[in-house]
Image 1 (cartoon, rainbow, N blue to C red):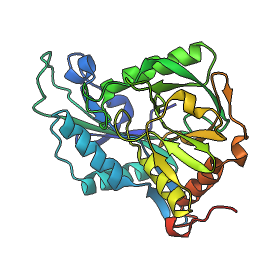
Image 2: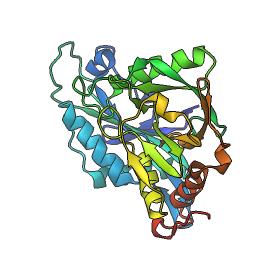
Image 3: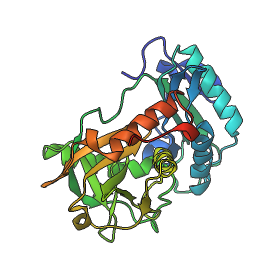
Image 4: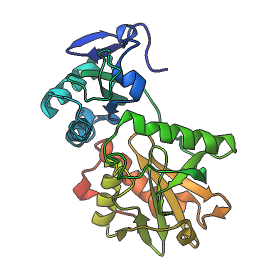
Length: 299
């Protein structure tokens, strides 16, 4: 699914066969989840292959490394150039891009690594959560306390929480989980940010116990440019009562509608919500059909 015998990956300064991209059994990252990553997409546009918001993603990768003391010396420009080369070598335009910074040296201590390794992989991947509206369940697992870990960093170990929450919800017959924070406020999904629509306004969780996603920020910008009020606030599940609709945003998921959360069913089909219209604007933006400045919402 992710690679075959012809696939190339970038590993520590070289383009190598993906089959040869391996890590040793005593790697610190393997034992402790001490690594950071990004999820990025590229799209075929009228002007050729374009990586969407490469700078924002690679600046966050640098921040994530810094936040956990993982040495990293690549510049945004170097990373972007390498990624375009890798896409070309693999014959991909519409692709998912996964940079991973990890510590491969044998190390069983709990000290910061003194060096790091870089993998960049690319593959053809559809929308992670599909195109159908989702049925969610409030997870019994909370998002990590931001005073325990740097929650705004995409640290590999953080995603154990995501795997547990997502698997638990799917085991009960739901499509995905919705996690609360330590104070009982709605935070986000296991791998996507959450929005809901009520009285013609959009609401989403503020900074605190969420990863403020790049897709999330793009949707907020598109909405505000189109004259839609977006409020970032803490809210409980009870405040979702009376909502017209809801949706997830994320690089892998893009924009996907939500039909229900446990017994709460939203009053409008996703196709009739602001979220659906913003999904169309987002698609037009990333594929180069329109510029953000020209994006207009339907009446």
